[in-house]
Length: 299
Length: 316
Image 1 (cartoon, rainbow over the protein chains, first blue to last red):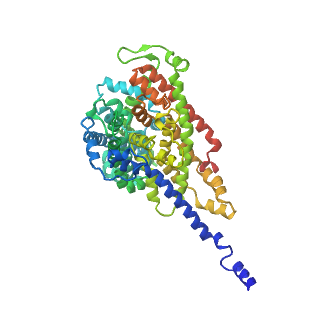
Image 2 (image 1 turned 90 degrees about the vertical axis):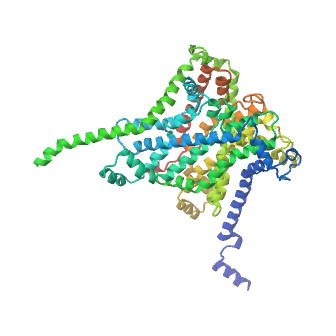
Image 3 (image 1 turned 90 degrees about the horizontal axis):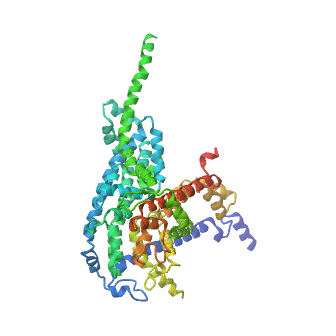
């Protein structure tokens, strides 16, 4: 009996004991992977959880020990009190930030499409040199040009306006130009040649052929720009000095710097600062990932 | 024969007319960027180089002082050395921690079979959040008395530090914050992992290579180009970090780079000289030294890369 079982297990399906079987090992492996993912994602999420619950707590529940994990009762008024501060009008900051978003993104898209098309499709003396300069400018630390730029804009009388932020965006942005060029190069030339024979000019080709085919990369650039503009801090800090002109991020920094600020109100303001950009990312996630994948795969 | 002979000289001329037209359209297309580059980058760079040899408070005309700014920086400016020290410590600790975390997360995501979208979003989320909001949030997370981090330490019987109010720990608060924000690097590592052919692992497994051997013999070498990219970008980013330290130090200690200049990152020092003291010439000289440091570091990394970066194209 005993010998027959050993021969069976040696010759049959289970050559190895079950705990060494491939299936069990894979199962253990996945268990460990998901355990680690769960623990780490809790760690990454926790600050957000703490921000939101703090934003909903009455003040006395914020400063107690051991900490109160969930607000009781939920105090929605925190948001009204945090955003209704007459010295820090967050509704105004929100509008200001959106003005910059629209003004900068539209300019960046328009100019970058044009420049990227030139670099992707057209030949001219000096093209390689210009492209090298464009790539090199990506590496330049902004610190070096920070002060002279500030001086330039103050000489132009642009301080305390949105011009120092919006105008440069209309002259293209190296990173976006590079990304678009990579994408444009993957579009088959035959499409344009057909349009050329029909007598289309460059602008028509860009508008009717290139742009419609490049929506994924344009979406990626729009989403990334939205995030960067929303989060931009040093430039608006330098150029805007009237509180009615602040952006959301600068407004929050000033709120934070206020003496004896209430922590629950500060967290409510933080939620308002963070939430829209997270929402945009959630909604745009699919387009974003697809766009990145497409540029990455083909480019 | 005759038609070919008459057509031949005409062809290049027609082509060159077309080429000239194409070149003109090219210059028109790239004009916005060229104008913008000259006006907002090249021009300011030239101006900045000139200003770094002047003393200028923005009220009277710039006064040429030769190398005096640079001499003062190296011989008589404790803030310069302090900011260099703070930035170096920040870079030395934050970059390895960030790279290891990003790679570890990417490997986990690469091994996972379901829920990848969800976990990827969770780990990327901090990268979406404004640095100002992140800084405000972390001062609350690291609040010495009521923050959850010290609370958790307290449960273990450890007296948590005073974080952003303590010169010995404030910079560590910034480093912890920076590790939370590794989503971008993680995505790049993940893309790199996806590019490693499965056949390599299968072959190694047949040869009896264990998990660790596969990681060190396949994953790391195949990821070296990705690591290189992440490394260069992180160094450039770390040397220019500003936002979080600005927000935390002005709010907590009331002075830039506080407490006791323990978070005086290099860019904070530049900002302070330029916009608080209105010492524009001196601040541009500081900025040029930062540029030189970043340039030399990047060059050193690029040069060293032939020793440790493996490019597929070189194999052939």
